[in-house]
Image (cartoon, rainbow, N blue to C red; front, side, top):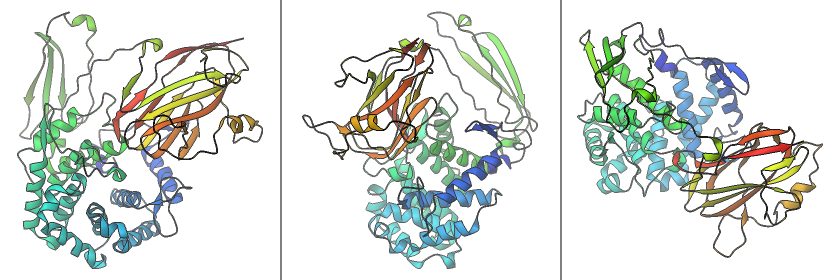
Length: 502
């Protein structure tokens, strides 16, 4: 984002709002400082990084963080050079790692990062040797590599053409072009279903954004470029994001590079919007407001019932630039909480609250008395291997989660209901249901948050406790489970009303 704001006509006219984080408003620069501090806290003595301070190192995460530190440094932030140097040393020594020798995908990702962080003379010679071996194996390039690693290889060859040569680069881009798919939204790079690099947060959106970045790095005016742009824009969610944060950052990064190449930030034009034959509004864009986000709303009663209503855009150019127009159209509606139905899209989740003496969970409750302590139970069915799984169980406003980490909390409840004898993820029909043991557990004011880096197929149960405090009738929003980097794999419970009586 910082790099994007440094582009002409963007940083001068486009100001980011302060972001509220943990209840305090911060500017972008302040948030980066906080983020850097937390990153440094997860760095191990050998230079590697872990997802949380108390978890083990991740080689893939270390590559990702090292690239992030390099991006931040390039954007003008003060990055701890000792931290970056230790990460660089760790990555440069990956040539001795078994995964580097056994995994071609990992070898490409680590080579790309090593060359980004160091001059050619400082990069271990085996990185160059290994990449040249991969480039000579056509069967490997066409079938046995993840598409994400292929794009990173294209980026490496574009940025280090003097090392690997233009012939290999052109051959690789031809291979990528053959892998591009087309649908109603445009052209995109799908994931290789047999080689998904889940450790590197691979999704079709991220792969397509990286493909765009590779086109820009090579200044390759490919015929499918406009269709790739169209697909990325059409894939954006209604909230303005592209699914996961990681995918969204990848898109922003590639769009920033694209702007610097194509100079769309220098466009000047007027756009007129009509609904049917009726002109609704018009907007003029130029250097002073090129990235202004103007919007217009049409009430439902202006749209004819049972008729097709055409939305028309008419553009008048005022200079010789490309003057591309980007727009979104969305339709929003809201449901009462008790009309929100459950959904199973790659997971199944059930939630219920029970009285403490209802040991068998036969009578779920949605009416309780202030002061009651209830047992909450989540049941989650995972049909296939899932990675980076997040679970959010929203609690009604009139209750609070019981925190057993507090010294004043009676821990006998947790001991009574938690199965400490069983450990394992595999489940088959007829076996005992297994307790979910998440890698991270957070008790927030409005929800229970759980995170597991990896879940195998099976059925899991998680038990927690809440205490009713404030009388009233409250929304009980659905509990949601999702695969963070494949958000289309998710499930939710139904929405309900919850009453706390005096």
